[in-house]
Amino acid sequence: MEEAEKEQHQKRMQKQKEKVDSHIASATIERGVAILLTGNGKGKTSSAFGMVLRAMGYGHKIGIVQFIKGAQQCGEADYIWQHANNVELQQMGTGFTWNTQDKTADIEAAERTWLHAERMLQDESLNLVVLDELTYMLGYKYLDRHKVIEAISQRPHEQSVVVTGRGGGRELRTVMDTISEVKDIQHAFRNGIKARIGVDY
Ligand code: ATP
Ligand code: MG
Image (cartoon, rainbow, N blue to C red; front, side, top):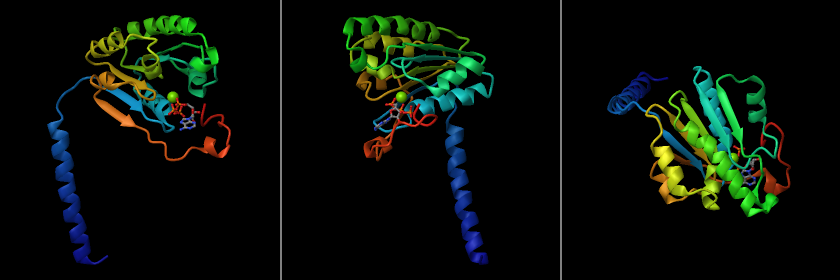
Protein backbone atom coordinates (compact mmCIF):
# COMPACT_ATOMS: atom_id res chain seq x y z
CA MET A 1 0.00 0.00 0.00
CA GLU A 2 1.26 3.47 -0.87
CA GLU A 3 2.22 5.75 2.05
CA ALA A 4 -0.34 8.35 0.91
CA GLU A 5 -3.07 5.71 0.81
CA LYS A 6 -2.14 4.48 4.30
CA GLU A 7 -2.23 8.01 5.64
CA GLN A 8 -5.60 8.70 4.01
CA HIS A 9 -7.03 5.51 5.55
CA GLN A 10 -5.68 6.41 8.98
CA LYS A 11 -7.21 9.91 8.76
CA ARG A 12 -10.58 8.55 7.65
CA MET A 13 -10.62 6.00 10.50
CA GLN A 14 -9.62 8.67 13.03
CA LYS A 15 -12.56 10.82 11.91
CA GLN A 16 -14.87 7.79 12.13
CA LYS A 17 -13.60 7.02 15.64
CA GLU A 18 -14.24 10.60 16.76
CA LYS A 19 -17.80 10.36 15.44
CA VAL A 20 -18.47 7.00 17.14
CA ASP A 21 -16.85 8.15 20.41
CA SER A 22 -18.96 11.30 20.48
CA HIS A 23 -22.15 9.27 19.92
CA ILE A 24 -21.15 6.90 22.72
CA ALA A 25 -20.38 9.84 25.04
CA SER A 26 -23.78 11.44 24.40
CA ALA A 27 -25.70 8.24 25.36
CA THR A 28 -25.73 8.59 29.14
CA ILE A 29 -29.09 7.17 30.22
CA GLU A 30 -28.93 3.82 32.06
CA ARG A 31 -32.18 1.84 31.97
CA GLY A 32 -33.80 -1.23 30.46
CA VAL A 33 -35.09 -0.91 26.90
CA ALA A 34 -38.27 -1.97 25.13
CA ILE A 35 -37.64 -3.61 21.76
CA LEU A 36 -40.18 -4.47 19.07
CA LEU A 37 -39.15 -6.96 16.38
CA THR A 38 -41.73 -6.82 13.66
CA GLY A 39 -42.18 -7.21 9.89
CA ASN A 40 -43.07 -10.02 7.51
CA GLY A 41 -39.63 -11.56 7.12
CA LYS A 42 -38.07 -14.49 8.99
CA GLY A 43 -35.93 -13.73 12.04
CA LYS A 44 -38.04 -12.12 14.78
CA THR A 45 -38.40 -14.94 17.31
CA SER A 46 -34.91 -16.28 16.66
CA SER A 47 -33.48 -12.79 17.26
CA ALA A 48 -35.37 -12.55 20.56
CA PHE A 49 -33.89 -15.88 21.63
CA GLY A 50 -30.49 -14.58 20.56
CA MET A 51 -30.92 -11.90 23.21
CA VAL A 52 -32.01 -14.56 25.71
CA LEU A 53 -28.73 -16.40 25.09
CA ARG A 54 -26.83 -13.11 25.33
CA ALA A 55 -28.42 -12.29 28.69
CA MET A 56 -27.83 -15.86 29.91
CA GLY A 57 -24.14 -15.25 29.28
CA TYR A 58 -24.20 -12.72 32.11
CA GLY A 59 -26.23 -14.93 34.44
CA HIS A 60 -29.28 -12.67 34.04
CA LYS A 61 -32.75 -13.76 35.08
CA ILE A 62 -35.17 -14.06 32.17
CA GLY A 63 -38.88 -14.52 31.69
CA ILE A 64 -40.31 -15.72 28.37
CA VAL A 65 -43.96 -15.87 27.40
CA GLN A 66 -44.83 -17.43 24.07
CA PHE A 67 -48.25 -16.54 22.80
CA ILE A 68 -49.54 -18.95 20.12
CA LYS A 69 -46.51 -21.27 20.36
CA GLY A 70 -46.51 -24.49 22.29
CA ALA A 71 -48.65 -26.59 20.00
CA GLN A 72 -45.78 -26.70 17.52
CA GLN A 73 -42.25 -27.73 18.33
CA CYS A 74 -39.73 -25.01 19.04
CA GLY A 75 -36.05 -25.87 19.49
CA GLU A 76 -35.21 -22.91 21.70
CA ALA A 77 -38.03 -23.75 24.08
CA ASP A 78 -36.96 -27.42 24.23
CA TYR A 79 -33.41 -26.37 25.05
CA ILE A 80 -34.55 -24.00 27.78
CA TRP A 81 -36.77 -26.66 29.39
CA GLN A 82 -33.85 -29.04 29.51
CA HIS A 83 -30.81 -26.90 30.25
CA ALA A 84 -31.42 -23.27 31.18
CA ASN A 85 -31.19 -21.94 34.70
CA ASN A 86 -32.73 -18.63 35.66
CA VAL A 87 -35.20 -18.79 32.77
CA GLU A 88 -38.95 -19.08 33.27
CA LEU A 89 -40.83 -20.10 30.13
CA GLN A 90 -44.60 -19.97 29.76
CA GLN A 91 -46.45 -20.97 26.60
CA MET A 92 -50.01 -20.35 25.54
CA GLY A 93 -49.95 -23.69 23.79
CA THR A 94 -53.01 -23.29 21.61
CA GLY A 95 -51.37 -22.89 18.22
CA PHE A 96 -52.52 -20.52 15.53
CA THR A 97 -56.01 -19.15 15.68
CA TRP A 98 -56.82 -20.56 12.23
CA ASN A 99 -56.16 -23.99 13.71
CA THR A 100 -58.12 -23.60 16.93
CA GLN A 101 -61.04 -21.80 15.20
CA ASP A 102 -62.57 -21.12 18.61
CA LYS A 103 -62.56 -17.45 19.55
CA THR A 104 -63.84 -17.83 23.13
CA ALA A 105 -61.23 -20.46 23.96
CA ASP A 106 -58.51 -18.35 22.31
CA ILE A 107 -59.43 -15.27 24.35
CA GLU A 108 -59.44 -17.31 27.55
CA ALA A 109 -56.04 -18.77 26.70
CA ALA A 110 -54.67 -15.32 25.84
CA GLU A 111 -55.92 -13.85 29.12
CA ARG A 112 -54.53 -16.77 31.11
CA THR A 113 -51.16 -16.46 29.39
CA TRP A 114 -51.12 -12.68 29.80
CA LEU A 115 -51.24 -13.08 33.60
CA HIS A 116 -47.75 -14.60 33.43
CA ALA A 117 -46.53 -11.69 31.31
CA GLU A 118 -48.06 -9.17 33.69
CA ARG A 119 -46.40 -10.83 36.67
CA MET A 120 -43.02 -10.88 34.91
CA LEU A 121 -43.36 -7.22 33.93
CA GLN A 122 -43.69 -6.40 37.65
CA ASP A 123 -40.81 -8.60 38.77
CA GLU A 124 -37.74 -6.51 39.54
CA SER A 125 -35.53 -9.58 39.67
CA LEU A 126 -36.01 -10.19 35.91
CA ASN A 127 -33.48 -8.50 33.65
CA LEU A 128 -35.18 -9.52 30.43
CA VAL A 129 -38.75 -10.40 29.47
CA VAL A 130 -39.59 -11.80 26.03
CA LEU A 131 -43.19 -11.62 24.83
CA ASP A 132 -43.07 -13.74 21.69
CA GLU A 133 -45.89 -13.25 19.14
CA LEU A 134 -47.68 -10.84 21.48
CA THR A 135 -48.65 -8.57 18.57
CA TYR A 136 -51.19 -11.11 17.28
CA MET A 137 -53.06 -10.99 20.61
CA LEU A 138 -53.45 -7.26 20.05
CA GLY A 139 -54.23 -7.63 16.33
CA TYR A 140 -57.05 -10.09 17.03
CA LYS A 141 -58.15 -7.98 20.04
CA TYR A 142 -57.77 -11.00 22.34
CA LEU A 143 -56.01 -8.71 24.83
CA ASP A 144 -56.83 -5.14 25.72
CA ARG A 145 -54.04 -3.06 24.17
CA HIS A 146 -54.20 -0.35 26.87
CA LYS A 147 -53.57 -2.96 29.54
CA VAL A 148 -50.59 -4.35 27.60
CA ILE A 149 -49.10 -0.93 26.84
CA GLU A 150 -49.44 0.17 30.46
CA ALA A 151 -47.78 -2.99 31.80
CA ILE A 152 -44.85 -2.54 29.41
CA SER A 153 -44.37 1.13 30.21
CA GLN A 154 -44.69 0.59 34.01
CA ARG A 155 -42.17 -2.25 34.16
CA PRO A 156 -39.11 -2.00 36.48
CA HIS A 157 -36.54 0.61 35.49
CA GLU A 158 -33.72 -1.88 34.81
CA GLN A 159 -35.85 -4.46 33.00
CA SER A 160 -35.68 -4.87 29.22
CA VAL A 161 -38.56 -6.30 27.23
CA VAL A 162 -38.64 -7.78 23.73
CA VAL A 163 -41.92 -8.08 21.84
CA THR A 164 -42.09 -10.02 18.58
CA GLY A 165 -44.67 -10.47 15.85
CA ARG A 166 -46.06 -8.83 12.75
CA GLY A 167 -48.01 -5.60 13.14
CA GLY A 168 -48.80 -4.60 16.70
CA GLY A 169 -50.33 -1.21 16.00
CA ARG A 170 -49.23 2.39 16.29
CA GLU A 171 -49.88 2.71 20.03
CA LEU A 172 -47.56 -0.16 20.94
CA ARG A 173 -44.77 1.62 19.10
CA THR A 174 -45.09 4.63 21.39
CA VAL A 175 -43.72 2.63 24.35
CA MET A 176 -40.84 1.10 22.38
CA ASP A 177 -37.26 2.38 22.44
CA THR A 178 -36.04 0.24 19.57
CA ILE A 179 -38.13 -0.99 16.64
CA SER A 180 -36.72 -3.22 13.94
CA GLU A 181 -38.64 -4.43 10.95
CA VAL A 182 -37.52 -7.70 9.37
CA LYS A 183 -38.26 -7.35 5.69
CA ASP A 184 -39.40 -10.33 3.64
CA ILE A 185 -37.29 -10.30 0.49
CA GLN A 186 -37.44 -14.01 -0.21
CA HIS A 187 -38.55 -17.05 1.76
CA ALA A 188 -37.76 -20.68 0.96
CA PHE A 189 -41.34 -21.71 1.76
CA ARG A 190 -42.62 -19.93 -1.35
CA ASN A 191 -40.39 -22.15 -3.45
CA GLY A 192 -41.94 -25.21 -1.91
CA ILE A 193 -39.19 -25.88 0.64
CA LYS A 194 -40.52 -27.29 3.90
CA ALA A 195 -39.91 -25.60 7.26
CA ARG A 196 -36.56 -26.93 8.44
CA ILE A 197 -35.97 -28.42 11.88
CA GLY A 198 -33.36 -26.42 13.80
CA VAL A 199 -33.69 -23.49 11.42
CA ASP A 200 -37.38 -22.60 11.19
CA TYR A 201 -38.54 -24.19 14.45
P1 ATP B 1 -38.17 -17.24 13.29
O1 ATP B 1 -38.91 -17.97 14.39
O2 ATP B 1 -37.56 -18.19 12.33
O3 ATP B 1 -37.24 -16.19 13.80
P2 ATP B 1 -40.20 -15.27 12.81
O4 ATP B 1 -40.43 -15.25 14.27
O5 ATP B 1 -39.66 -14.02 12.20
O6 ATP B 1 -39.29 -16.49 12.42
P3 ATP B 1 -42.99 -15.97 12.46
O7 ATP B 1 -43.91 -15.09 11.72
O8 ATP B 1 -43.12 -16.05 13.94
O9 ATP B 1 -41.51 -15.58 11.99
O10 ATP B 1 -43.11 -17.40 11.82
C1 ATP B 1 -42.38 -18.46 12.28
C2 ATP B 1 -42.19 -19.50 11.20
O11 ATP B 1 -42.68 -19.08 9.95
C3 ATP B 1 -40.73 -19.85 10.95
O12 ATP B 1 -40.71 -21.20 10.62
C4 ATP B 1 -40.36 -19.03 9.75
O13 ATP B 1 -39.35 -19.59 8.92
C5 ATP B 1 -41.66 -18.98 9.00
N1 ATP B 1 -41.76 -17.69 8.30
C6 ATP B 1 -41.39 -16.50 8.73
N2 ATP B 1 -41.58 -15.55 7.80
C7 ATP B 1 -42.10 -16.18 6.73
C8 ATP B 1 -42.51 -15.78 5.42
N3 ATP B 1 -42.42 -14.52 5.03
N4 ATP B 1 -43.03 -16.73 4.59
C9 ATP B 1 -43.11 -18.01 4.98
N5 ATP B 1 -42.74 -18.46 6.19
C10 ATP B 1 -42.23 -17.57 7.06
MG1 MG C 1 -41.98 -15.58 15.51
